[in-house]
Length: 245
Image 1: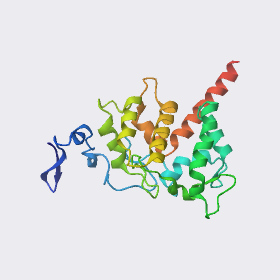
Image 2: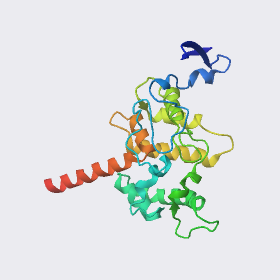
Image 3: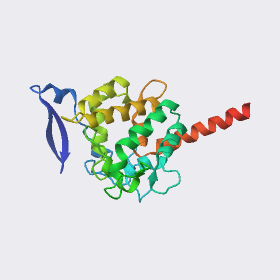
Image 4: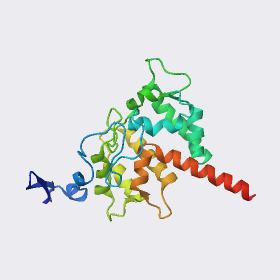
């Protein structure tokens, strides 16, 4: 049995988080002591992403849910609709190769467009409407986003307490595989595929030179700021290369 000690009203309280009779509860311990860093970590935040590393949640717009912020990068003209060409261009701007950007158009819009449409009639242009983006939440995920598009600090931290085995502050490709396997819900093939694609594409585009996808990078992917930062870095690099030439 594994018990964690917390304090409430000046008294110690023991919370059992794992038992030997069910080994998986020992292998995947939940995050504890989050109250020292994040106030009310079990309460989902609508417009910011507070974590142990970034307790203030970062610099986020107050009038957009975290899930809306996650996709706003692809809506360049800010009309509230992401078209297939927007998705292709967005992936190219953050360094995705042609084949990945091309496939993303079919996977993303073929899967998500209809569920965000304002009526039951499908959009022939396969646009994704960002005001209804919460409808695209799928199963077999980490539950970091809730069904209304909020950010859940506890669910975010659980990913690392369970799968970042050597406390390095991020996840390797192997650990991401175990994470996506551990998140699988029964009879949910759409969720299984979507979760793996999302994580592996994120790893491909954002893992550092040590081949680790860092905690803070993942947080920034969740609120979308990582996309703007990477696009800006790549654009500056291109301009620098042109000047050198």
